[in-house]
Image (cartoon, rainbow, N blue to C red; front, side, top):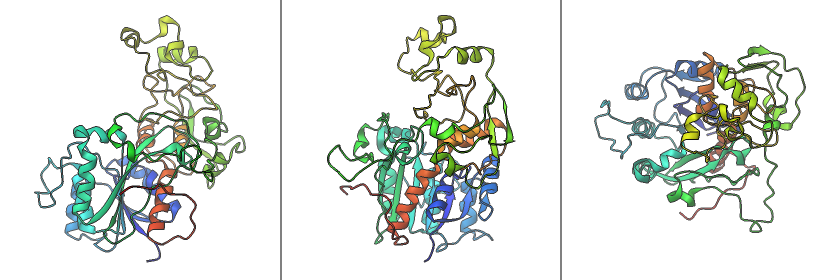
Length: 411
């Protein structure tokens, strides 16, 4: 085995695939039901076979050995982020055409059929509290019932070079008898943030070493908003273009890296704010931490005032150059998060959102503007996929260079 071959399920626009590819994993097949996300994926991965269908249909075609589909023994890694709602346990002998089957069960069906050496599952932190916290334990148990060892880790994307506060849950599994991949220790410094709903899984959070416990751990500086987007041209509210010149050279190592292979700037377009939202944007001060509490009384959202909600200070917030992005969502909507540009009176563009996720500029997003934002917000940050891919390759004995330290676990 010279390369690890992969099937990416629930592939979205390809963030995880990009990362795994950068690590050296060969993603040969992918499935994504959303047409615009699938088109983005195809444009970025011309050598990959992309299926655009319900994963349950894909599974049935795998069983039928349809032409062009992988067979058991072809796939060494099955990866993806199946939604976990409705999952209450796994029975591989159930009726697989039952519409009540959850998507995570379908993911596990594919694993059971293809029998890959490794499995990588990704999900949002909210899955930790599903069914009163039982779902993560059930997922690990399901993989163990299929003959795998498995472990769960909660990772902060900002610790791996992403300029964004983004917690994500990963389950990595290896066939019995193989080395189980570890989770890498943080590489970059990042401000401490809260993970809601993770109380029962604190031991699974991958943290930096305690101060003084590891004298050899020297984190790289936090990647900031300025590091990510300060080179991008000025655009107005609702402005921008699908393609334009960069207009300036890279101003940071991050920018130089993401611009590799891209001669022009793409997707630097932003959603248009209506009159009220634009007035709020203009009124938010250009300073760190500014948000809805700094608005004049007549512009403060009435529902936030009515509930006296002072907890979510990032709402209608303005980013600042030395700070980091809030979690990138599927809409650049000021009510939910700080999405106002540090200096310009507008929300961040699709390209700026993609930079916040660590996407290379060569990736061009398909579909209308709303779909492009959604694709970016749903994606796994490529740098996170890359470092996890490196750990899988290391466990498989396919790499000798140890670039990252790994977290120790009491299994």
